[in-house]
Length: 163
Image 1 (cartoon, rainbow, N blue to C red):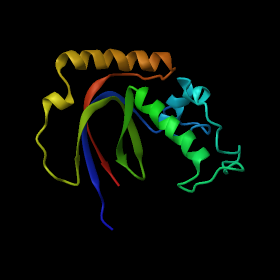
Image 2 (image 1 turned 45 degrees about the horizontal axis):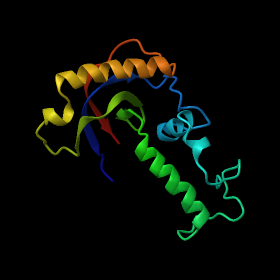
Image 3 (image 1 turned 90 degrees about the vertical axis):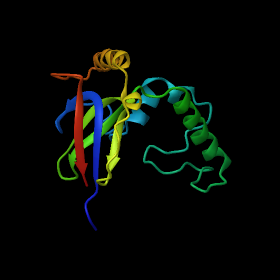
Image 4 (image 1 turned 90 degrees about the horizontal axis):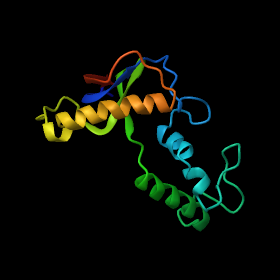
């Protein structure tokens, strides 16, 4: 099996593997979307019963079967909430599987190229100058609000990930 590569240009804040990001603890296990769902109140607002035990198994009456109405109701509500309340940031990995690091970026303000296929940079897709300034401000506010320490940035990054 060969290596795959992803190159990304994005506006963000660079973090190394030692960074203390709020979703990297045991509770969220690196799942930023799950962290966002909880921190913004989605978990408490879900009117459906949570389908899992504290150990991570399905509760009685719930199952992974695609026709389980109770399980589907919980997941469908969560997905709808996530679509209506998107996290304004995303993560771009760089480095490799053995030495993975991350850039916290403005969501949907990046362009990626996969597996060595050249691609024309789309400035409209990446961002206008006005949007870049707003994005920089939003990233700084996001980090401050959620206690994410960083030394520098945001900056434009061209990064690569090999895995």
